Image (cartoon, rainbow, N blue to C red):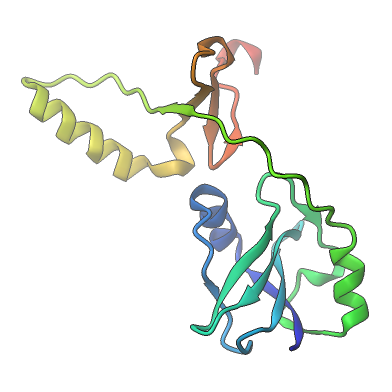
Length: 165
């Protein structure tokens, strides 16, 4: 079982942050190999640890999508690591106790002018598809606590008040 650093593009990382789908592939890795998942770019970050399944996909063992670590020199290319390099980074990742699950309400509100409700719905989905998670804020709040509503764009908090900028 080998240890690897798997570097993904900024676009792949943004996709993971939004959808958290996992299942990244790395052809060099074999089933059972462990991976340090890094987003490359100007400021590379470690966004998780994973293990390769029998289908060749890297499945998360630890997700750091909401609080990535600086990757330092790991952010340049996919390569094999020795055990000491892997353990040095893995030790920095303290597994957080599982947070209690709660219900969140998520909303995307768009004012749409239309001749009928059906036309309004079609226009809504067209806007959602066209703008996507990079431009369209989603509003999130814990069920029963509407005052805690916060806007998110690409999985990160985004201030939507133009007077505060």
